[in-house]
Image (cartoon, rainbow, N blue to C red; front, side, top):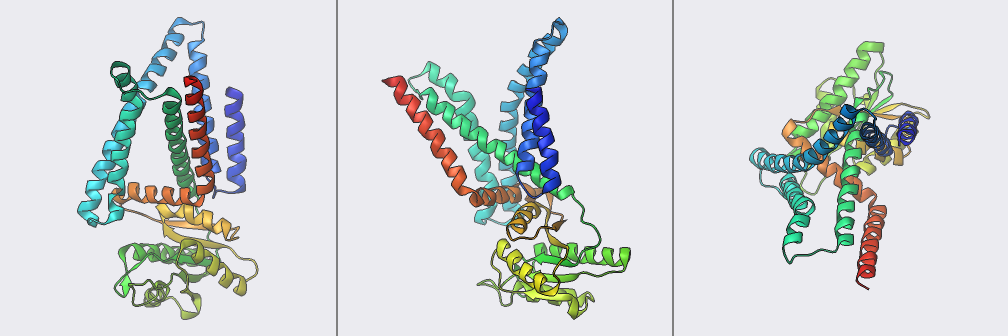
Length: 343
């Protein structure tokens, strides 16, 4: 187990050096830490020293006790976060996501940790292969979410060099014909980087403001962003307008076409919110932007849980085929062994 932990850790450093914009980094790091924890517990329990062995068993008991409580606490925190979102952001459907996830975690908590005890004393019975299959799927998606979160945090730690040729600001909605507060934060992030690079090495990158016109918007987001940058003193020739995109992927595809037409080899940064930065980086890699880095605008704390959940759901949708195959495979194996145990 120790060797596996070391292999996974070495693979993480190699993967992270090659490309910081992949969930594989989080999977390798989390897998390495999990293997190391198992190795440590096994070593302590098998130790010839009575005290160390006892500490190993106590640590295992503590982990098995804390995990259910942690799962329960996170569920309660998500429900509380849901109430905060409704209070500060209104009763929109997307703001109910944290509340729904919290209730879902409570349901899973009761199913995993309470159902076996209840079923042993009552007529309620769930075949163990089905139970283990559902537990396995919960474990898989929990590991995937933690890996996604770790990968996102690692990507946010990366600081772009002050030698960029382009700054891509991603749109995120208007308030009538003005930038929404969220969009203004992204503009601030890009503008501050522009001024910082200008002060550092007396070079100024070109802005690409990227965002089309929504059905309920009077102007394209890119046009409004350009007006804001012009009002801040950015020269007109330093702003390129991409006003046809509807999604993050289109933002980056169309922006790449514009950058390719201006300069064959270039460096660029993407200005968006910190919670959205990692997925934007994934799309940048898919779009062929090999050297794209990111600038993450800060997000208010109560909005972060829901924002990361939405990002994770979007990531699952990006890989829906493989996740669907995994679910179907686990269910098939569970049903197969259930039927086999009955026959």
